[in-house]
Length: 238
Length: 238
DNA sequence: ACCTGAACACCGTTCAAGT
DNA sequence: ACCTGAACACCGTTCAAGT
Image (cartoon, rainbow over all chains, first blue to last red; front, side, top):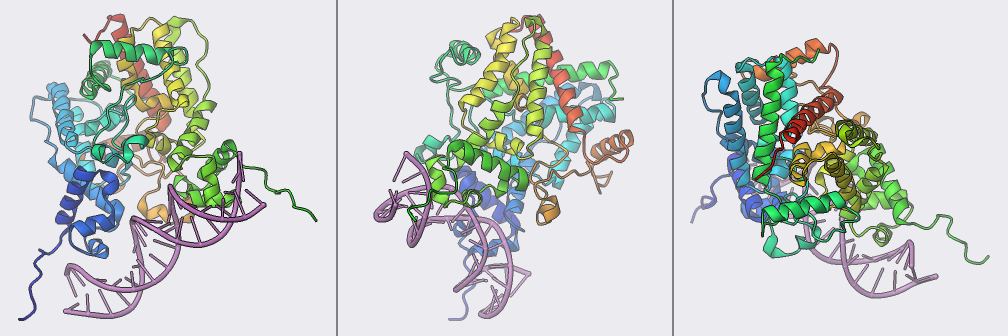
């Protein structure tokens, strides 16, 4: 027998990123270590460094892949910028909804890759095409913040990483924990929060945690309304 | 000679948290390891575990200390809720401004400690005292999001951790990197972003990065305006 | 050009023991 | 009650070598 060809197809960046995404989807972001990822690919850890610069680059690449999958803004008349923004952000939300690790990964990125800049540019472009000044567009982007990625900051509920007590429970691995707003709070200590929790529970019987979809849409409505008023009033930072 | 009393004062939780904060202030959040912290305290790593449950608990404690230092809402007539919210959030901002690591630490917390709940309760309480429904107050808190801690999400600028290229440079250790919005971007690739960067540069000659204080105040204005409209209109989620 | 093997310099945390 | 010593089970990443 002569030298067998390697039965494993040769690695490339895309395959590494795809495997990392699958690993994060299945076992959570913390499971994505260079060593575990290499093992899943049937390769030695150092082999990965041919295709990603380091672990940060790996995470950047995972996020980039996600962003590339986000739908582009629809072609609409320029004055329908509200619909265009809503569609773009909702489209982004649908992509990240399939990957529980995405929110945390995005929040920790510091590198503004081409994919990141492209997404920001497309959204800024909607405002500018609608006649917004670049000045207003700039500050409006800051105002919208991470909602350009399709998520609101989680306030009452936990984030992707499970609460400490549940972390060792294999049944909740990689799953988004849903907890009540105020499970056992004393109304004397936290009157407002307990009132909010009671009201929310009454409105959505049986539900655990907040309705993040509702919160996202609610925030978007308020923001787009306020943004529209500024534009109509000819707002300027000067 | 009999047994010398330990020249090092006996450790307690507060001293551990104080040392951890000093370490983060001086060398950044990544420098806060159980081992380094122990070394600074002249103690073996395991000694820390008598005073904090684990590293997450240490970070929770560091954030709690910060929150405890934040000024309480001023006592104002209930209808001056805008001023009360503004004062509270601006007060929070002043505290976290002194600690560059705070933003990242807060964003990664999943435990809602008493200090966290207390802060949220005080802010919710301002709305409720002003006659906001608990329903509206709930969603308004989601809308404001992390701005209750005195910061906006950073969009164009990097976060507390330095960019990779600068990370090895001891001169920028623990310092907030300030970079231009679009240092070397091709206008053909990113027309909107380049336009924004050019406009921002023209308005603030010599400035690097965005004016985060301005962005915080801008967002607060828009949010409080929109929130006030909802309240006046008798908004309800039903 | 791509992958391997062995090592380095770290982590957080356990356990059992000391005072 | 508080701290120590030694060890365990990991990390990301280097270097030099192999094919």
